[in-house]
Length: 110
Image (spheres, rainbow, N blue to C red):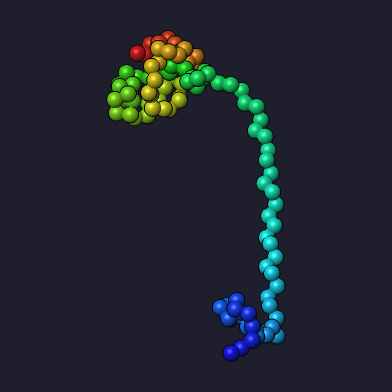
């Protein structure tokens, strides 16, 4: 029987010799820079529905119905193109549309 303790017999370390092969060095930890935190600038509060800069625009009745029913884009007298989806009675009339309508009526148009 070999010399050694009872624990050596179970682990297989009895009489083990050190190896002459070099061991690999421990890996170098990867160091990453800390994230840069910037504060957001103060924002100007806006009304709840975001309608503070909206106007009721003037469009042809046929176009208005196509916009509301079919979801098609319409063109106002002032040149704005959009798909109507809100109640125009909630907003003031667009000054550019008012002026364009006045010019059409003064010229004898519809």
